[in-house]
Length: 129
Image (tube, rainbow, N blue to C red; front, side, top):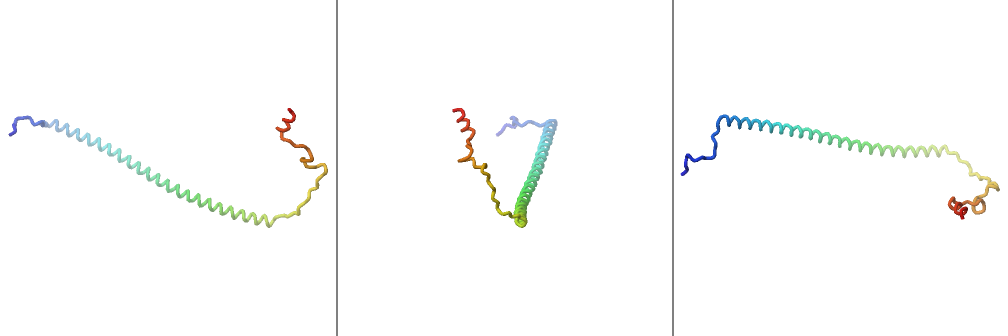
């Protein structure tokens, strides 16, 4: 049997101690609510940032597709333009019979029977030797 007068380790709470514990618990609840509010704000901001990045990714992909389509159409128009230009140039071409250029006797080729032609290095080496 247990001694009823033996200490149990439990303190007797007074009203002041209960009020103090209650106020401490309320303060802790308020602090944790502030932390939760801050984390909620962070989550909302990150969600908005993710939505913005997804929208930017969609914009970039649409822009890339439009750019590729524009490049393809530009190449197509360039080919059509070159074909039309060639057709017009051929239609308006002026043909001249080949001419023979008269060559003077003084205008002879430089090599092998004409003027001696050497590189600068060869000419300098011959001069210094």
